Image (cartoon, rainbow, N blue to C red; front, side):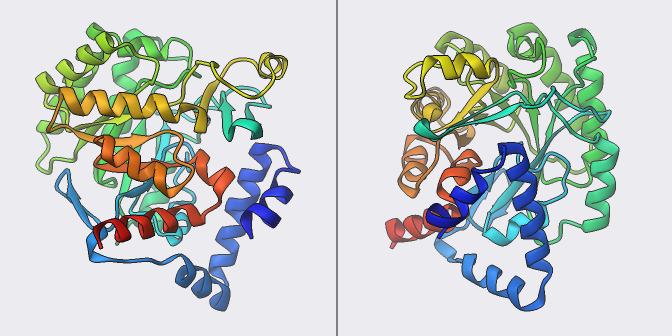
Length: 345
């Protein structure tokens, strides 16, 4: 029904409008007594074989919602009704910011991809804290993806990450340090060896001073060379970082079916969805070969169940989806879980 009826209707709207429309309508539908229970029942698929204990956390299943979908922690409870094993909210910054001018989100239907240059648009960490405290997270696994404000220079970026880290510490199950979005000027230079070492060593000192040790992961770009990935892995090991998320969106535009003039008209932004799948797989496979014990969350181009299985076979402990739902619909989560059950069956 999604591909034949709902998707064509949603694609009549701009991508950003369609996103806000669907999340709001879905939340309203869940609040209706009969319809809400029907939706939850339809998407529920629980099986002991899906459970995984990673990072000291017992995940009910290994399929998560990637960061970027719920930037402000407004929809994590309603999205959990789709059967996600965990939900990552953010990227959140210390102070709210509008992000880049619209339009800033574009569909590539011929490629089952998206290009975005959202620019960490969010209401700020205090608003997220208030929402999490009000809504609660009982029975849910929620990750907090943290970043820096656009106006914060890189030499002061540590302060931004520290603010978000402290304020969210008692509310999330794990943290993701995001230095890999292409849509905040100069952010990706924080992936370089010296600034990344300084940032992660600071975050881990803060974490290790806490009584409860919340896991910390790093999210990297798919555009890093093998040498750069080696540097990142060395830093993660030396600083005791718990895991890695591979990968964020790509700035590459190679191999697309969409016409070059359309791509040129869209302009800058990070490409996600099916076009990034092969590169994300290669990065996950490379990391697993280099770091057999490192926790890896694989994300990028998962548009059907087989893609998730392939990502896990490449070495991912857990997987995340976002863009794939735009083209395959919310049943994607259930289909992945069903395939995993069949595989272990």
